[in-house]
Image 1 (cartoon, rainbow, N blue to C red):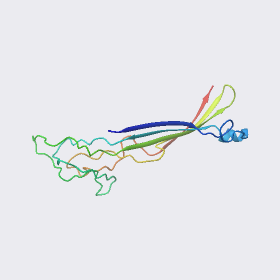
Image 2: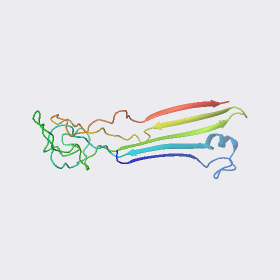
Image 3: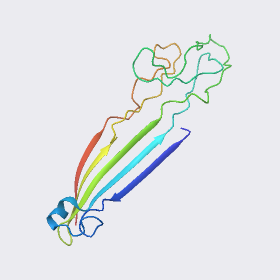
Length: 173
């Protein structure tokens, strides 16, 4: 990918005893609502250059950006592409600067709270959400000239799935 951004954040919510909001909160309410921490990791990468490995391609290709399974959902203009005859030298470029695959965006987030059970024993409860926004990241389009799906992207990126939640409890002693 040409561009990549990764950002991480961990912040304590300022609510509860000894914090900005609710500094004089009842100890029972503080145990429930105070001391929570949020965290997140955001990843973005621009699409990869699409490599046209075989066949005859036009001198320029227009990016259309269509995704999904509709009959006219082409990622790039497929007109002008054809299969080269056997033993013919390639004369067109391997890739075009303006034709890249789909972008990748993802946010993982978590919320956690630590409880001090006594001087030595601490407990942490945590909820993590992977793909917290439940977004869809598309795979690169089909690049096989002659295939009926040529130029279309209608599947999700490999290894990518919908939102997943993970609950955990950790004891420290």
